[in-house]
Image (tube, rainbow, N blue to C red):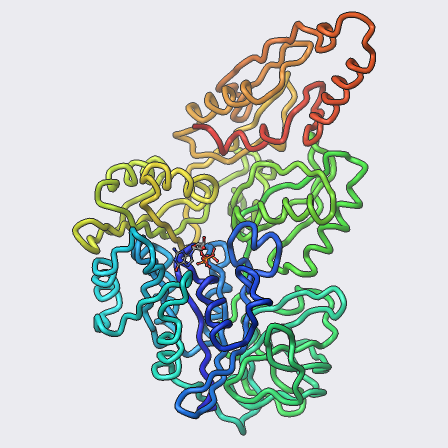
Length: 597
Ligand code: GTP
């Protein structure tokens, strides 16, 4: 155990975590130059394209110092708020953390929130000032920020560049010297913490774990404590670039298990593995079921493809347990699924994967959060609303609650006014304001989740010219004056466009949504009336004027091929459109509510 170091890298998004991880692997000869593709750890195509580590991974390195051999387990963590639960599990498997701070950008919101997570788990923090090669680097000032934040010595801060490789040696030395080795009882019953899992289409689920106490042997009959299921440890081992099967993984080490599990849902991140014959008394603390935060309907563009869509969703769920879905039907869109996501990024990823990997063309409806509706009835009855059109009639509705979050925003003091205005416009309440330095302010707000999940982050970046970072944590449900706004196209209510909005904002929003829809709906051969209504009351109205021109009219003469081409072009343009009543509605119209500015 004394020769093991388990560490993770925590950082704000884009501060250079993956690049630095690659350097560590290179320096310890874990991968050769040839194997080193840019950002080796991001092995999904999508991840590489987006430059975001979506799923955590672990990798083992050999390292020698002063003639002693060490095993370093690096656990990579995702950087986006949508995946923060995974960050916390990865952190729980470590004894130390490299806290990477971009020397040009300084400390950002996720630097702080990830640092707090690491401190909660008593991790030894090694601060690293990264991207020191950048001409815009401001090492002295950022060092001040780090000292202020973690109260370390200035000399404890390492300086590095993932790009040039500068400082990588020192980082490895510091890991051995400063990160404590794991502690645990090798003779106790097995307790291993699952911090991640991936799906492999040939071998099923690989679960990654850290052995906290005891040891796990190949062939052991094991039990996952929280799910209560038992499996055979068909293969266990440690993680290099490839799997290294082993006969035993001992206390303090990090490894994988393959046990014939076919469905991601069976493996819960945060669960404890023990043996059936000599089970541990209780699970390792801290297990939490990940709950979806954002819901939206996903419908096939072509109604015949419903079954295909179900197949695709089932397959996606095999390797992404955080995706939830259940069938729903919409008067406007027919049969589809109400899906739950961790956040908007997760939703975009799923939509993209459906299209790329399964060749599906889908319509996604306006995303919403999950509400609690209380009915006027004794005894008090609470129902969970994941789809706005399920909200009961006002006459039987006692009250509605919505989820709130605590938001932390760090920005330059110049932008404090603009950030406050944005948050207040989003129904936020300022709770705290702290000057980290004379130029940098940390603001804490309580805001309804519904107001921030959608485009809040983009807006924040725009108004602060990129100098604001943001992080949030759920803080439970609170009562709000919410009403259901319906939209009607030529008199027909389109359920997929309904949204729950705050009463005081209803008139303004209704008007803006109608205007936006007028812009987004293609003109047709007849007028289209767009109306917003609350209950039976129409609160706004706009009209899309009829189209007069025939698109083929300008192809005078008998050039039939040209005419056909034009018609084909029109047909292709129909992708991602749905016919609702006699009106054609394009995908972006379903998102109109979100894009009002
Ligand atoms: P996420 O996985 O999305 O959280 O990002 P990350 O923190 O892993 O950052 P990543 O390693 O993907 O680097 C982000 C960007 O910064 C990339 O464009 C890198 O090429 C660049 N970068 C990383 N390290 C350095 C560095 O030391 N110097 C300079 N100049 N650029 C760097």
